Amino acid sequence: MSTPYVLELKDLRKSFGKTEIIRGANLAVQAGERVAIIGPNGAGKSTLFNLISGRFAPTSGEVWLNGQRIDGKKPFEINRLGLSRSFQITNIFPKLSVFENLRCGVLWSLGYKYTFFKFLADLDDANERAEELLEMIRLDKKRDTLAMNLTYAEQRALEIGITIAGGANVVLLDEPTAGMSKSETKRFIELIREVTVGKTLLTVEHDMGVVFGLADKIAVVVYGEVIAYDTPEAVRANQRVQEAYLGSVLAEEQAAGAAH
Image (cartoon, rainbow, N blue to C red; front, side):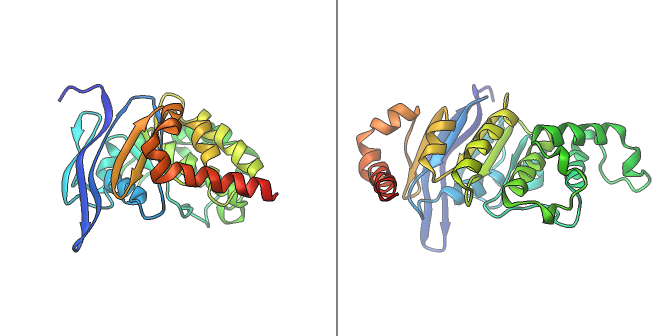
């Protein structure tokens, strides 16, 4: 299949029992684009991520990655085809050091699969790549710190490091800045921009400042459908989006700002 899109959803649907959560979602993402997925709570954003990454199998419809159909494949199979994701809840190895976490993330992509006859300390290429990632996510000074002893923001940075460690060209980040202060969020947006250069990024995000500051395009999901997919400026001006979601969100943010 020849396509200009690195990721494509075609009439994707997902039901749990009689309840239809995703109702014919369509999306086409070009290589290198940064896409934010927004929408009200319960709209189906996380379900969409779970369908793309293989945690859920769709009820019907198709998911294409790098020109290959992937719906129905297992998460590890999709990962090996070039897609990696983070989760809302930080997902790291708490009792391993920062460096060891990153080294675990690079092993498979460097060809170290099920081998029991090599010492990790002797894998020069894996160690070198882990050191590069340490600097990239700005945790080189915490190299030997146990992951459980990092701050929350540092743990989130480590998870992003693990997410990109395998060299995936499509990266999914699920609410990466949730729970962070404004200053942490600002630094984290810069980090995400840096580590995803040359990659395709999809992120679920509630913070409109993050969305409009990071995304090339925005997909608005309401009641399991993508009701708009366009540049931030066009989405902000979209009457249907304002009525369904964005107007109330911006009003809430303005009210919160006035209160402070």
